[in-house]
Image (cartoon, rainbow, N blue to C red; front, side):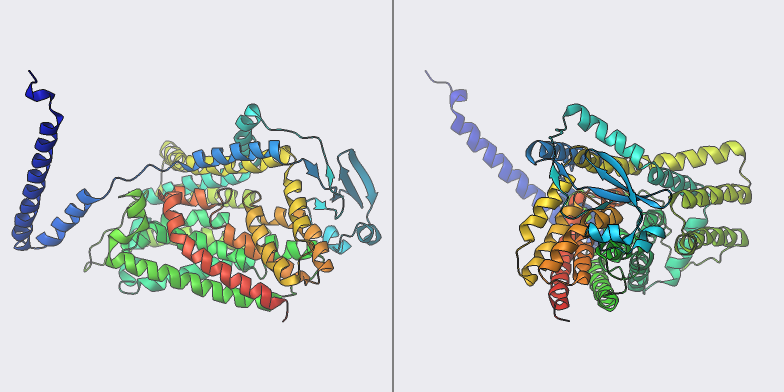
Length: 555
């Protein structure tokens, strides 16, 4: 005798009937509730909003930035087992009037003369070394030699992020002090009041925020090399753009993409175009008008792209890539009041705090541009501004320290990301394959015709940027080698510099070893959401840059 509960088909039929019944019931319930809520003030829109939240698909978890970087460190370590080790000889100006020649066998002191540079096929004027414009080791063309492999293993992988943190301690301290400064200022309430007032003033003209701010950040990057300084603006810009109806990607696009465009279209950036031109043996003013035109076009293209995306988000918030990929992500910064008709004037104390806040940033920009400040001076500036804030707010010592430390803690993960990212470069350098990647790449493009050479060079610099995110480091490592090859295939030196700028500029938008992961961490947005947003823009910028490079061969 066969009992009924041994027949699976019966249970399957029952399950499907029950599923159909529940679905029909839910549909009817939704229809009834929609009809009811339509009769209530703002009921329909509120109900649909909640329904969409329930309907939202389950968001897949995305690895954290530090996990992504550790995976890249592991891949870099594996590469040291596969790619032959090797190194170029380098030359550096030492203290006093002499050069230091560094080879795998040791260091040698050489005469500080132009004749020596010419004999080594280094096309850099002697005065560039004397003035300090070239400080990092410069690779010597034709000096590459293979070395014994230095395979990176488990212990080296664990050590890499630690060494990276040691190597970037100046940037890390800058970030932590900024966190302390911003928290003390936010606790005063002046930030919310000031941004609320600005939001009220810009009501209906939100697109101009994108236009003006993106242009300013791009100009800062192109003119004096603004990069890490952009990190300080997220606590200001995120509440402002969210109050204007945009999502969390828009402030990243305005701040990070703006400064990154500065690398792509640098016309006077001392850390990229000037160092690269010096290393290539040409004047940095050679090709400046071409770069200014690129600055205007690339900035206009990016602004238009951000505005188009922003307008789409304002019409339909569910079209946001943050919503689609990460779900409902909360802003890490205090929100602004959304009262439309109430606009309170700022009191004297708030105005004084806002003047101090804005003056701190203006002094920072002036110091970098005119006084040759860098991270130690900028860090001291924000520390001093924090103390001055405490005096104005009449905070006692204990409250001030607690607020400052709490703010520094809020950016600790960002600081770790910067340090771990440097670990990738450390693995490549200690594995002695950084120069090998350059050598085999240069060897590959050496016999190509000019048009093909310059396009492949653009692609190669995009690849190099994955491993070397420092613009000045990339310049002194690659320009003497690539510049010598360019002469053999009749490619102008200015186009080699442009290929370097364009390649680093494009790939800098997404390279994990750069500033994109710290920037995304500041707004709680995943790398996957950023990639979905920025990929079409990168394709357009690549086409624009390729056209400029090919055209530059004949201009």
